[in-house]
Image (cartoon, rainbow, N blue to C red; front, side, top):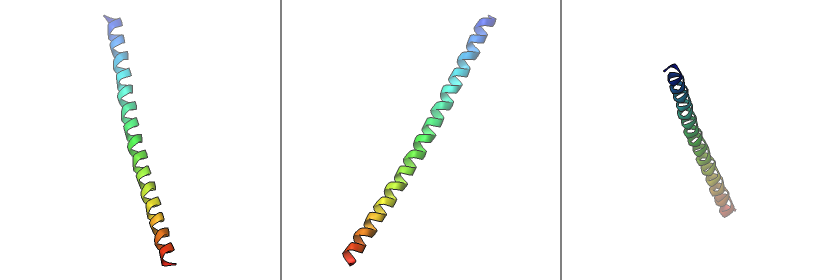
Length: 57
């Protein structure tokens, strides 16, 4: 019975690690996606400004 309890504890610890890693992965993906969106928006704004400046000249 003691060995079974030890195995169960190990399984629960591994499951906890999997949940933690999954959560960190989702958070990292969300941060990367947000950063990419900001970069795309800044590039689009910059391109629009260049286009306006070229048209004004």
